[in-house]
Image 1: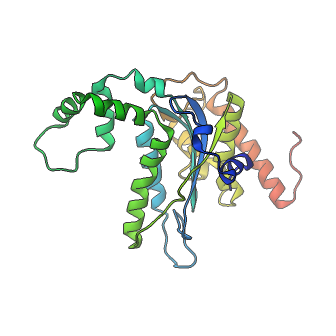
Image 2: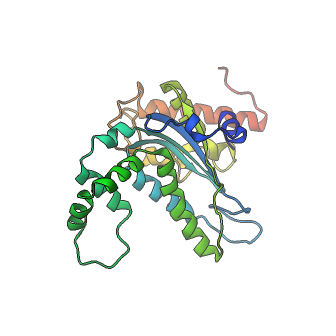
Image 3: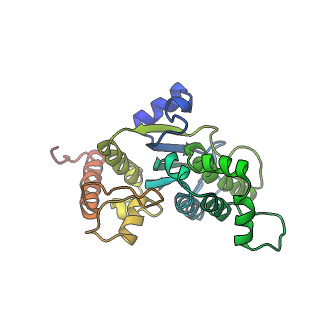
Length: 268
């Protein structure tokens, strides 16, 4: 389930410009849910179908976009009917990219659908010369809304094709909470990574597939500094290591499990 602060922002209906000022950098916790009782992933008890493979769709697309947009991805969790993302956005980074860099990044995720004999490099050159188009794409590559749109839309189209239906797959708006300092970011990362634990799917966060905890366990050394999973911003590491973060997750998971089973939780 969502954190109370995330739920408050969505339910009160604040325009996103009040939370994410256009052109401003910041770190945000975003939550997007499915509609029409759709299953994003997992086993649907009504139809009996398994949609577990869709978790890979979402994770792959998320990692791909995070290497292209002017963002850093800190945490994610792909649940059965919703998605959590903790991401830092910095439009100023996109402003420093050359027209050639903007064109390369955009074409990496949106290659031309029209038949062409041009190579990728040739298409980059043509696009980079279009000053107006590059200005638009530069803004999009530094936009949280466009990041989420480019994440959700292809997943929705693919899921609808698989389900043989049309219409909305995701809620129209994604929940968004601004994280104002490192403590808030760290706390939200832990909250996101422990979603499968609170759902009763696992007891060890690192064993929850398609989460940032599992990704860090598989791809990061324990003695490495705690950095975003992937991104383009060159963010300074937090003042703790991957091992510190894993220990925090493990302790908090034990606390969450203890409260669920009625056993005493460790003292804070």
